[in-house]
Length: 164
Image (cartoon, rainbow, N blue to C red):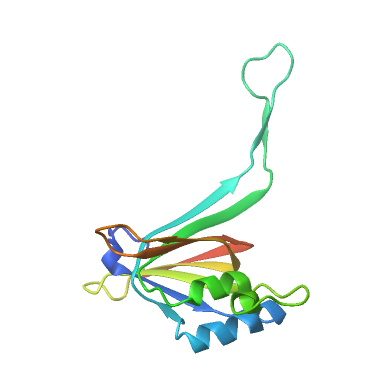
């Protein structure tokens, strides 16, 4: 059955999980230490998928003769009201606590975005971003509004699951 219902941000939740490998192990320690398996107090979550489609134009023709698929890029942002260092640690790994003497492992993790309306519990939409890495972190301290951090991320690939 195809979902024909609408969701709001109140229907959403975000969870993080560590994949296998050295980068996943680096993330696992941070996720557990900061109780970040379920991410709370988020707003303005954006996920963008870009496909670098290239048009082939023949000489003398105004319309493209062929569209060729190119590289796919997955990126996005998450705004968060908990300011506890967890996100900056996911960006910098061990370099968030001190300056490492050499190169270090940047943590990698999976982000799962789930939408589920409490009134319709059998209908669920899940997007999982695999092997994501934070590529930038912004800390905003406005004069008369909530203090927020915003992280940008990139992911290797994503999967989608619709249930219900």
